[in-house]
Image (cartoon, rainbow, N blue to C red; front, side, top):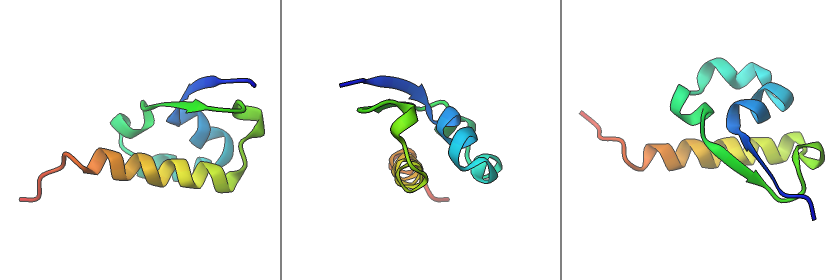
Length: 64
């Protein structure tokens, strides 16, 4: 089994580049571990990873 670690920015630019401007730098620099590597990743998988990453980064956010 191929395990690959990539930055979220790499996933976004490869599968959903139209979303890149909407993500924060901190989100884009998140390291994502892919069980079967980047080549096996589908667009639907990328969307799920992006959504999860956004929600993880919002956990520590404070509303003013």
